[in-house]
Amino acid sequence: MHVLLRIGRIGYMKIVDVGFTHVAFAVRDLDKSIAFYERYAGMVVVHRREPNVPDARKVAWLSDHSRPFALVLVQSDKVTDTPLGHFGHLGVACASREEMDKKIKMARTEGVLRKEPENAGDPVGYYVFFADPDGNTLELSYGQRVGLEAIGSMASD
Image (cartoon, rainbow, N blue to C red; front, side, top):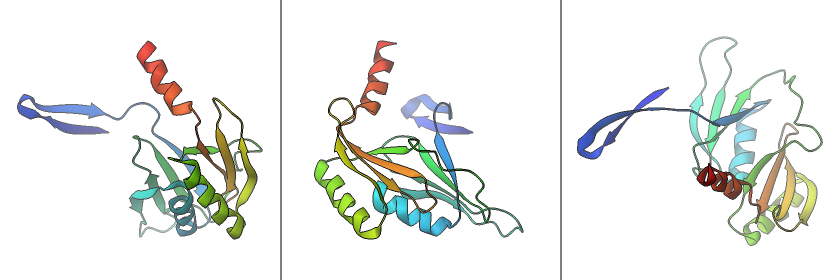
């Protein structure tokens, strides 16, 4: 996709969306999955399609607006994709340990806590696993350096 971006008096510049843009999950109930990721990952719907065409799939793109990356959810009556496996997960960093602890308490109450929180030290930090409505794993973390390491490696290239 090309987007025209206005650059002051210079005029317009064409921008192409390249690089790591999204991860996609097939889900049974789009609204239920949206509610889960809004509640636990702080994401919001940035795009939604509910076509009036037989056999077309409902789709939602979610983002936390921290970077140009989206979680794409595609509703399907028959979810044949398997969850990401024992360790596979979608990782989201939190702003504070207190924020995580509030969400951990909610997850326990709502029965979606998959793994008790653990503080694994530097560079992994404090993390916890939750189960989304379709069995995929959401990891919340605080003090994990994955994003910072990725940015740091760009500076050294």
